[in-house]
Image (cartoon, rainbow, N blue to C red; front, side, top):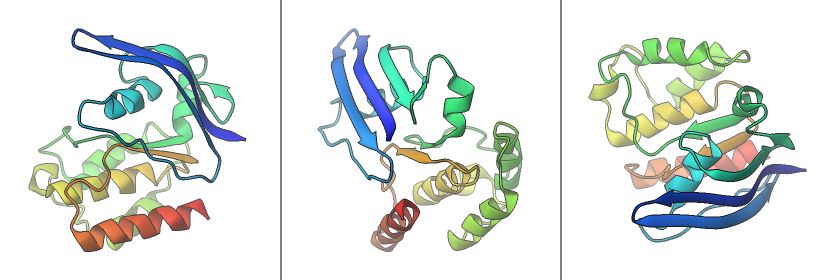
Length: 175
């Protein structure tokens, strides 16, 4: 079964067009989008997630994303490029807010991930380094039983040891 199927994805900006992009990723596989800055990698992920309007078909585990967006998003753990929301809120408050969007939220799994990533829940988002924001985003994405992870530049801002830890985490999740 395919975890993700994208057919004829198209997004037009005044100075850039993403045209007729099609690909599929089988369940259990790790895949990456590689390209220059501005090549459309983030645009592709935002289109897949329905965060920007685009044309084309997206299926998540066979489920048509546009027909059942809520159910499809429950299957996805998304880490976008840059963590720009709720800068003045403590991590625990952000997690409480996010948890309301996911019926299968696992608070214990979230706390466990935060412990693994050395995240202090009373800290405010603005107090985190870029690398710690990515770790926080990943903890959120992994705490609701997602079966598909979509990560936009997940190693950006991570030190070499944290990058290795992230790769180990992804490999263990695949298994």
